[in-house]
Image 1 (cartoon, rainbow, N blue to C red):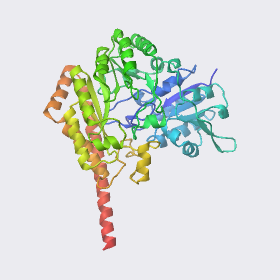
Image 2 (tube, rainbow, N blue to C red):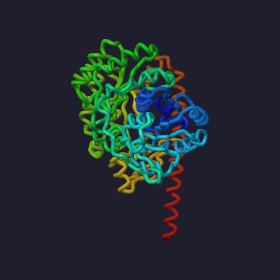
Image 3 (cartoon, helix red, strand yellow):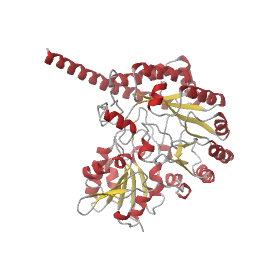
Amino acid sequence: MPLKTLFLNPPSFENFDGGASSRWPATREIESYWYPVWLAYPAGMLEGSRLLDAPPHHVSAEETIEIAKGFEFLVLFTSTVGWSGDHGLAQAIKKANPSIRIAFVGPPVTTDPDRALNECEVIDFVCRREFDFSVVEYANGKPLNEILGISYKDANGVIQHNPDRPQVEDLDAMPWATKIYKRDMDVTRYNVPFLLHPYISLYSTRGCPAQCTFCLWPQTLSGHAWRKRSSDDVAAEMKWAKENFPDVKEFFFDDDTFNIQKARTIELCAKLKPLGITWSCTSRVTTDRDTLKAMKEAGCRLLIVGFESGDPQILKNIKKGATVERARDFVKDCHDLGLIIHADFILGLPGETKESIWNTINFAKQLDCETIQVSVAHAYPGTEFYDFAKRNDFITNENMEDGGGHQMAHIEYPGLPTEYVMEMVHKFYDEYYFRPKAAARVVWKAIVNRDVPRLYVEAKSFMKLRSQRNKAARAKAAENALKQQESISMNA
């Protein structure tokens, strides 16, 4: 029998969707949770394991510590923003259960395993990049010095970095994540405002060949090598999931780039169509009309699209591999076909100016997608963006957050103060949603879906966070003004 293993997406800040499969680890403006897909695969390979996704199930740190007393091995998925809290939780678990072995996985321990092992003495080892088989081998008794892709301290306290583990190639041999959801999780706890509820997310591929400089996952965990499950395997899982989750209204393919290969996408759509399911996915603007048409006919409802910026130079700076012209054509195709778009934008990317921010706001209004998300640029360690920002001394706050998990601007360029970027995030939302056309769309959706109570809660949550961010931005502005005044006084 393998070690009795607890796979943990740990409790953290209130409403914090911080690890396991969250692409942008932070407390949400509106409470929403993504599935811990990465943890589901090794959990499906170990008899007697449990996957505990604490945040959406509102499991407290104290309850987590108590649960961990019943396990021999803990695998904790950590995040850059949640690192200090995760470190403290691991220490408390070790104190309550001294014999438990602990492994940390996730981007921070991939990019800086030495720091992780030196700062948190209760960690037995960390896994770099894909960790599925590393933790499974350890649970089955393989010695640390024989496990590829891990780092650990030997008997003399010296950190050892074992050779890298090859990426998983045969994705069809992996367990189905949905079977672990059925075993360990309550799918009604997962809610994303622009997806139908309840929903389920899963992967049909791993990796992303795109070279976007800011994107965390391909540069730290999944890699740039694009690997796909067979269309038969994906369709079989979807058929099983439909039968076993009769109340689920939507399935979401949370791949880094779901439809990057036209032939494969059309082939998969042909096998999804007979199932009669509603599904959504991520997409790049380079997807052509024929592919989008096949997706729509197979039950696709919505696409999450990272437009990032409406400024051509910034798109070049971040190696997006797309243009504003192509984005416009893509959106027109989606609108013509009846596909809904949730559009993602980022303020504060390399080269950002006050002018480029307004270019992006006006671009977004021209596209007129159903919903948007506006984020502040975060330079995560391990990304090309981080190296750029660090090299040029643009990083003002390594923690990226305000102490409560809320995203705060932490990149400051000459002539573009962080408080201005935060102010423009709110201005962006105002400019977009308070247009008569957009406002009418939101009201009509609320009436048709009879979802007014949820919309009220979401609006209240957003306005609360907006107030907190504005307060932090004002405090930062006051601090800068004081420093400037002190500098003038010293030079007088």
